[in-house]
Image (cartoon, rainbow, N blue to C red; front, side, top):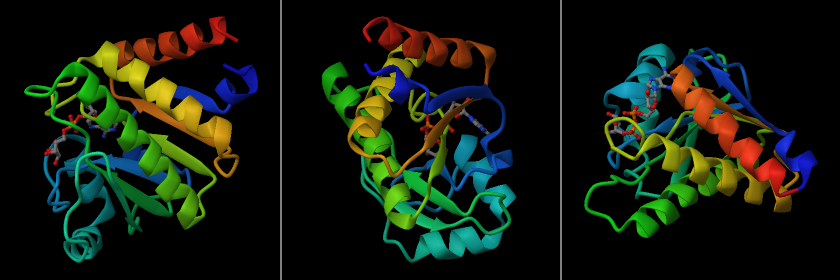
Length: 179
Ligand code: AR6
């Protein structure tokens, strides 16, 4: 992997609702009507306008992504994607769906006009994806998407624990070794 691509990817530990990037990604469910985890935090911080706009969208399938405004959040847009529920899927199928969530969220953000995007660790909470496996899929799928799309200048992986941050940094370093 080209080092210049990896330099557009950054890992931080923190709360994604505080990120002042162009677009933050929400790990939503198929209804897009809010929930727990990062979804709950984003809806609480954005205010009721976000749920009203989401209610017009007709839901979202796993691996797909839809864009809304960001209301009271510092970002300009929220990109809602639905990751896979790990249990019950073949691991390869789960990987493919998780990768699609990252790639489609990135594309939707770019089409809205975003140049910087922040991601949470999609599917690694309620949806039960093993954290290390999810971090490798997240980093590889975003790196490949950035290779062919120069609209997005910076991607930030906003990790909610030191362990998640460590796993994402390790996945970037593993790709750097291949460059
Ligand atoms: N900022 C960044 N990351 C966060 C935050 C935050 N404020 N809060 C939690 N995380 P989850 P999923 C991390 O469960 O697995 C919801 O109810 C968290 O530590 O939020 O995709 C939806 O409505 C974990 O690593 O999302 C769906 O029903 C990661 O975000 C379902 O959960 C994702 O955990 C989606 O499950």
